[in-house]
Image (cartoon, rainbow, N blue to C red):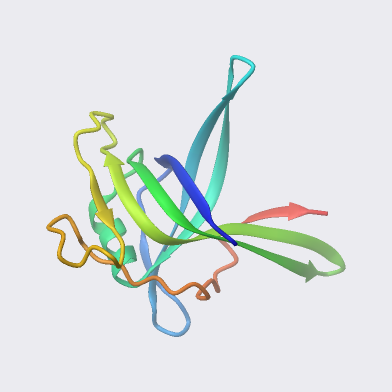
Amino acid sequence: MNSVNLIGRITRDPELKSSSNGKSFVAFTLAVSEFSGGNQYTQFVPCFVWDKAAENVAKFVKKGTQLGVSGSLNVRQNNTNGQYQTIINVNVQRVEFLGSSSGNGNSSSSQDNNSGSNSNYVGFDTPTNEIDVEKDAILFED
Protein backbone atom coordinates (compact mmCIF):
# COMPACT_ATOMS: atom_id res chain seq x y z
CA MET A 1 0.00 0.00 0.00
CA ASN A 2 1.35 3.42 -0.98
CA SER A 3 -0.67 6.04 0.89
CA VAL A 4 0.36 9.47 2.18
CA ASN A 5 -1.81 11.85 4.25
CA LEU A 6 -0.43 15.26 5.20
CA ILE A 7 -1.69 18.49 6.73
CA GLY A 8 0.33 21.64 6.23
CA ARG A 9 0.47 25.11 4.76
CA ILE A 10 1.27 25.90 1.14
CA THR A 11 4.53 27.86 0.87
CA ARG A 12 3.71 30.09 -2.13
CA ASP A 13 0.80 31.02 -4.34
CA PRO A 14 0.06 28.09 -6.66
CA GLU A 15 0.61 28.51 -10.38
CA LEU A 16 -1.33 26.48 -12.93
CA LYS A 17 0.91 24.93 -15.62
CA SER A 18 0.53 22.40 -18.44
CA SER A 19 2.53 19.20 -18.86
CA SER A 20 4.10 18.17 -22.15
CA ASN A 21 0.99 16.12 -22.96
CA GLY A 22 -1.36 19.06 -22.27
CA LYS A 23 -2.62 18.11 -18.79
CA SER A 24 -3.00 20.95 -16.32
CA PHE A 25 -1.17 20.64 -13.00
CA VAL A 26 0.00 22.59 -9.99
CA ALA A 27 3.31 21.81 -8.31
CA PHE A 28 3.46 23.16 -4.77
CA THR A 29 5.37 22.69 -1.55
CA LEU A 30 3.53 21.84 1.66
CA ALA A 31 5.18 22.87 4.95
CA VAL A 32 4.33 20.10 7.41
CA SER A 33 5.23 20.66 11.07
CA GLU A 34 5.85 18.03 13.71
CA PHE A 35 6.78 18.26 17.37
CA SER A 36 9.41 16.14 19.07
CA GLY A 37 11.05 16.64 22.45
CA GLY A 38 9.41 20.04 22.86
CA ASN A 39 10.79 21.29 19.55
CA GLN A 40 8.99 22.01 16.31
CA TYR A 41 10.42 20.67 13.06
CA THR A 42 9.11 21.51 9.60
CA GLN A 43 9.39 19.26 6.56
CA PHE A 44 8.92 20.81 3.11
CA VAL A 45 7.14 18.27 0.91
CA PRO A 46 6.85 18.74 -2.88
CA CYS A 47 3.35 17.86 -4.17
CA PHE A 48 1.67 17.62 -7.57
CA VAL A 49 -2.07 17.85 -8.25
CA TRP A 50 -3.63 17.38 -11.70
CA ASP A 51 -6.53 18.36 -13.99
CA LYS A 52 -9.68 19.92 -12.46
CA ALA A 53 -8.36 19.67 -8.91
CA ALA A 54 -5.23 21.58 -10.01
CA GLU A 55 -7.38 24.30 -11.56
CA ASN A 56 -9.31 24.64 -8.30
CA VAL A 57 -6.17 24.72 -6.17
CA ALA A 58 -4.80 27.50 -8.40
CA LYS A 59 -8.10 29.38 -8.17
CA PHE A 60 -8.89 29.08 -4.45
CA VAL A 61 -5.58 28.54 -2.61
CA LYS A 62 -3.08 31.23 -1.63
CA LYS A 63 0.28 31.16 0.15
CA GLY A 64 -0.24 30.11 3.77
CA THR A 65 -3.52 28.26 3.20
CA GLN A 66 -3.78 25.11 5.31
CA LEU A 67 -4.46 22.01 3.22
CA GLY A 68 -5.03 18.35 3.91
CA VAL A 69 -3.76 16.18 1.08
CA SER A 70 -3.98 12.46 0.41
CA GLY A 71 -2.10 10.67 -2.31
CA SER A 72 0.79 8.40 -3.07
CA LEU A 73 4.52 8.76 -2.58
CA ASN A 74 6.52 8.95 -5.80
CA VAL A 75 10.21 8.06 -5.50
CA ARG A 76 12.53 8.03 -8.52
CA GLN A 77 16.24 7.61 -9.04
CA ASN A 78 18.02 9.95 -11.43
CA ASN A 79 21.58 9.71 -12.76
CA THR A 80 22.94 13.04 -13.97
CA ASN A 81 26.60 13.11 -15.01
CA GLY A 82 27.39 10.13 -12.78
CA GLN A 83 25.66 11.61 -9.71
CA TYR A 84 22.71 9.63 -8.44
CA GLN A 85 19.81 11.56 -6.99
CA THR A 86 16.61 10.45 -5.33
CA ILE A 87 13.58 12.54 -6.27
CA ILE A 88 10.68 12.37 -3.80
CA ASN A 89 7.24 13.96 -4.12
CA VAL A 90 3.57 13.30 -3.41
CA ASN A 91 1.12 12.69 -6.24
CA VAL A 92 -2.00 14.24 -4.68
CA GLN A 93 -5.30 12.48 -5.29
CA ARG A 94 -7.44 14.35 -2.75
CA VAL A 95 -7.27 17.94 -1.48
CA GLU A 96 -9.15 19.35 1.49
CA PHE A 97 -9.14 23.07 2.21
CA LEU A 98 -8.75 23.34 6.00
CA GLY A 99 -8.28 27.06 6.48
CA SER A 100 -7.39 30.34 4.87
CA SER A 101 -3.96 31.93 4.90
CA SER A 102 -5.20 34.27 7.63
CA GLY A 103 -5.46 31.27 9.92
CA ASN A 104 -9.13 31.72 10.86
CA GLY A 105 -9.82 28.08 10.00
CA ASN A 106 -13.45 28.80 9.15
CA SER A 107 -13.41 27.41 5.63
CA SER A 108 -13.43 23.72 4.92
CA SER A 109 -14.25 22.02 1.68
CA SER A 110 -13.16 18.78 0.15
CA GLN A 111 -12.21 17.68 -3.35
CA ASP A 112 -12.34 14.02 -4.21
CA ASN A 113 -14.02 11.82 -6.73
CA ASN A 114 -16.47 10.31 -4.21
CA SER A 115 -18.27 13.57 -3.45
CA GLY A 116 -19.79 14.53 -6.80
CA SER A 117 -23.12 15.52 -5.25
CA ASN A 118 -21.57 17.46 -2.36
CA SER A 119 -22.09 21.22 -2.63
CA ASN A 120 -18.47 21.76 -1.48
CA TYR A 121 -17.14 19.69 -4.35
CA VAL A 122 -15.07 21.75 -6.75
CA GLY A 123 -13.41 19.04 -8.80
CA PHE A 124 -11.09 16.09 -8.80
CA ASP A 125 -9.54 13.99 -11.52
CA THR A 126 -5.97 13.23 -10.60
CA PRO A 127 -4.35 10.25 -12.33
CA THR A 128 -1.72 8.41 -10.31
CA ASN A 129 1.03 8.21 -12.95
CA GLU A 130 1.28 11.74 -14.35
CA ILE A 131 4.44 13.05 -12.65
CA ASP A 132 6.70 14.33 -15.40
CA VAL A 133 8.02 17.56 -13.91
CA GLU A 134 11.41 17.22 -12.25
CA LYS A 135 12.44 20.84 -11.77
CA ASP A 136 10.03 21.44 -8.86
CA ALA A 137 10.95 18.22 -7.01
CA ILE A 138 13.27 18.10 -4.05
CA LEU A 139 16.54 16.35 -4.88
CA PHE A 140 18.51 14.27 -2.40
CA GLU A 141 21.96 13.05 -3.34
CA ASP A 142 23.00 9.54 -2.33
